Image (cartoon, rainbow, N blue to C red; front, side, top):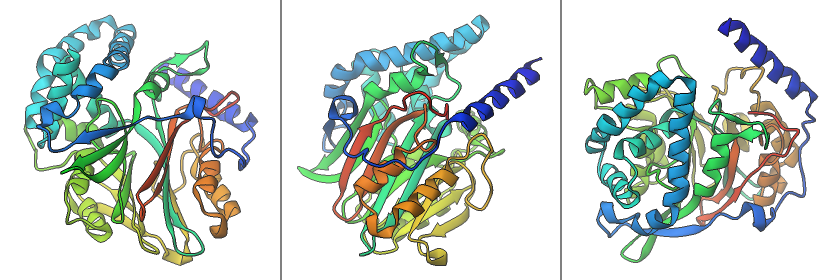
Length: 388
């Protein structure tokens, strides 16, 4: 019976998507700041890790607690018997923070102490982003060779549907937690990221005049759950967390575009993933397709005279699922935009075109790797809109 329900659900999605008009949008930039504004804060790396997020913890404790509480309620509605799992997370999962590469475990502990949220729950919150994000990332150049990097972050698939507001519940709860972070050291800017409060890894970031990175989930049978169990049971900790090794690259002052590509291509990982990397110079763009052990493919900008490369959550040499084809509309809109019109405005229009924009999309980020310019906008997809 469950199998037939799944087939029916997927079939309904396919028919709903076929009724939605997919056009390449224009005139979407800049969006209305009343609905799209994302605040920017400073995190001082000179402070001890447990103190870096104290001020923001006071400000964002309530929306973070609301999100964590919903996740627990969702689990219990799925099955009351899972209360034992929640108790296990609260009582046992916190130990994972001690095993994380430093300073990240200490940062999570600092947030837990400041918000009075269970440490195990915040560890789980951070783990979600290792295995559960759907995204679209683009890196490319304009006709003068100026580099750009852009991404949509989609999150919340199958974690509860809000019938009244016609949207994914987790996506709604995440939007109030979106922020830009300027990491400083010695009073100077080191790098910028887009994140959700409470998450200490890196999924979107730029180091001015050095490189930019966005992280997309990769579906694979040897997936992140296997790596997580290996880590929890201390079977294999000679592997990196996908978003923490990305932040490591930004923490290292000796990293440039080529070093980042090499590092993210060769470091053993907990989960398969796509790293989309941009640089400040002409044709410095790459998509690194990762298995847990090593890179399967490194797709460089300029291959076959490409001026842009785009990645969603499927290997670029394969066809995506018929019910989740965001890459074909994305490529079509980028081709229509053209190299001569490559800009923040053009990229935002592409990211605002359905189904690149969908009900899971919570923000769009626009990056110039050379200058370090970063613009982030909260996104909504009004009905009718693709569910993902």
